[in-house]
Image (cartoon, rainbow, N blue to C red; front, side, top):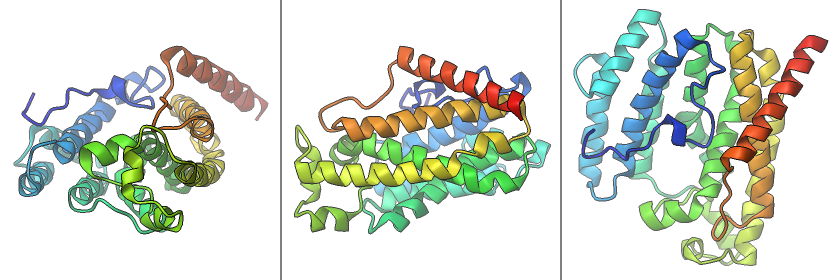
Length: 276
């Protein structure tokens, strides 16, 4: 554990990471990528480290991908070389964490998706490459990964602003509603902010409609099952954002609800594969 370690692990994430559905021999490599991403995320999110220190630590992470640097990055670099996986996924993820350190506001939906292109899409692309999947699956992957990222941003919009001074809700949307970023620190979302969150949740539903065919496009049956579960969890969380106020209510799954949704998704996915 380092001074930047948040103590958060893969079981604490919103969505499954290397669950039992994944082939056992591939769970380790996925967790190697996760530990790299978690270490970089913890650096970017550290409450007291200066901007200069964070950027230096992220550069140390980047150096490790090529040989000398952070141990989590060195382990991932070895994995890249052993399995012939494109290191661009990890490099782009580091670009996202640098952006977190240096940019705290977004101008529009396209800018937000541009951030997701670095912070979320490479994660799914790495997993697909690890499984030897066709890169024709990338568009559906990118839509799902972007949706997961936006869901996280909306769930944690208050925390991101209060604790990290980051606002992923596009500023012009707030300004058009007569709001400032301080509205995100309120005990309860104002009706105008509630309407903005609803609009972003609806746009996230559009992403999820684009990613709906993703599980069917994947050859590996176990990975396809995990993607089907993640898709269903994301759909339900987006519905939750339309029903609940993330400033005053928890918009996360309880373990029992997540388990019920996952089981239902697995049954539907299995029936669909049999039918095909």
